[in-house]
Length: 456
Image (cartoon, rainbow, N blue to C red; front, side, top):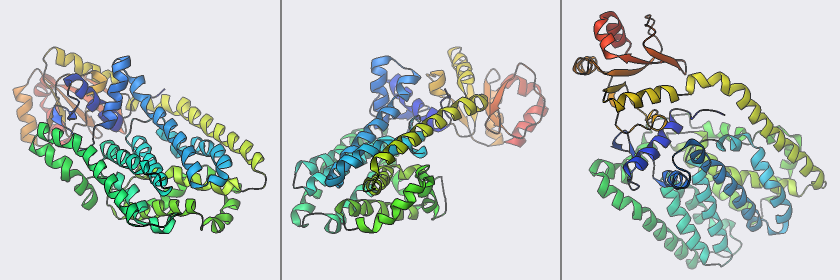
């Protein structure tokens, strides 16, 4: 119902497309250059879908709801391990609480990395709880899940797993001795082996700059001095309640919160606290912040709500009510797509201009993009050549125009008020418009070129 949203969704599928088109499944590429910002696991899942259906939108976008279904099933399994005495009631309502949450529903339709990371984090926690029950295969599961979590979204997976390991003496139902930490060392080594199994050959194939980026640059940069998404330290304190909507609008939830104190001695509640509290504190200290970074802890918060509701005296009546709220959330999301998408589509759908760029590339017409290029046209247009990214430097812009009089220049315009002929393609884009300037027209109309350079 809605187009792929720039710049994230279009960029990620452009990376997947370029790897597919190059038949290089080791090193991610974007616009002809190595792409170090994300590991390859999500791209591999998209490739797996394309290997069955061919390259198309729907199979790539189906990855997210499949991952969401896995998250729901994993949450049911966690309920069994966290509160075995109340497992039947908690397992019954947990998937409804998840699916009825607005924040969770939002990710059902997005091509993003966060649901994939959530799947791996939940699996790692499953392994820890198995290890807590003296099942040594739990460490194997945690190691594999943590390693795949690194391939899903990088070392951030450790921020969700390590605190639970270190705080085990507090939440565990068994005494914590050397065997527990020996098991964790085995798990950690396995995770490192899995991650390096991709990173080492990818680093060798991608070159020195790419190798430095995936081994250190991206993680350190985002922690110490984030490239983007800077926010105040208290963002997550505000975001967490919003992540639990609409359930926090339900008075029954607030009445159930009065029972939190009686659950604090339960190992299940302690485990959730041992994961959630350190995660919120650590992420609050990191400069780059987005609410979606906390998506992996959402199932634990939902499980805690389910635990509180499970001990209610009229549980069967609550379950009817919960299903109605969940259905209302789903209907609301559908209505938002029916009403909002037709209004926003012209300003976010880049399909037409992407296809125009593809036609130009087939004719060997030079194409440049003014400013940083995020790959928003590559997948939509199935482009097979890089797009020249011109920096906001007047001399370089003028030089490229004069060297490529038959070319075209893509730019985003918010302020340029000059009239343009009908032959110049333009479309609404966000708060401005997207223009595909023929270089010949700009060279023949100095006033437009001067205004363009001034606007740049």
